[in-house]
Image 1 (cartoon, rainbow over the protein chains, first blue to last red):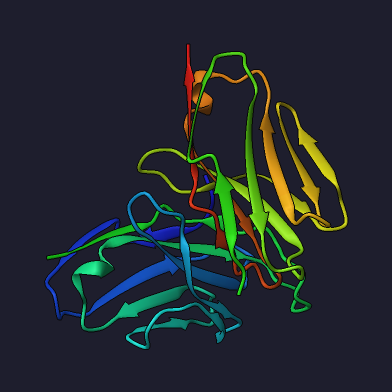
Image 2 (cartoon, chains in turn blue, red):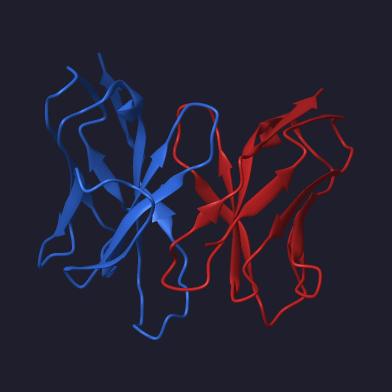
Length: 116
Length: 111
């Protein structure tokens, strides 16, 4: 098991509502990336936070936003939920040296979001 | 941006056989290629990775090969066991571990 934890594990929301998902990174890791995994698909990159700054964003609208805290934990916020936002949301933590050299990314167990 | 294609989408083998999953990528700047195993309802688990300065890497029954010229990389599992049954994802990245994933291969190992 990795040291990456996510909460909650399951969530049901109504269309139009807002949701906040949380991720605690593995001890010593300074980078958190968020992914959306629709049923039967591979994870899709949403955005990444490195030392509390957004460090890259995938093809997701601005209603997907995030934060990283000084302890490197992170939040994913989604406003104005749509039915298509139903998915497994995964966070991955890694230790980046800032030189662009990739480090191994370890995933949390995910939050299963259902929008009705 | 990066695009990763993965084949096959499903793969059925008998216990003890070998399994090969292939991926191609589009961005020649990509330099890190991890493979993840995801069991039903669980998190993706990193099983092996390879960097662009290496052509092959092996870890017990699992090996990965990389051909930078052709922009493809492959996962090889030998002596498959029923517990190898899962969905396998390849991924590629050119910086800061922002991974682009393939669509996955469902591997079924029959006893």
